[in-house]
Length: 23
Image (tube, rainbow, N blue to C red; front, side, top):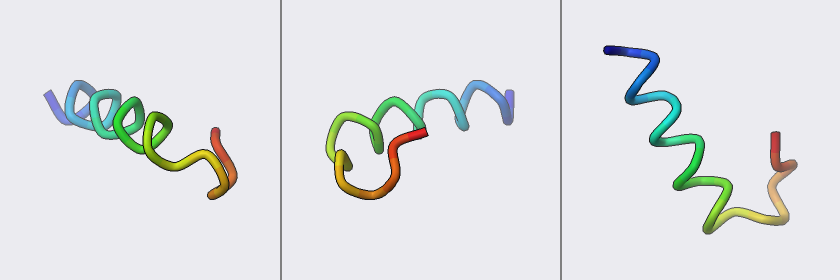
């Protein structure tokens, strides 16, 4: 489930963070 949370957080960060080195 940790991966699920990580993926979810990654999507959220990618959506709001576009200048902080999007991975």
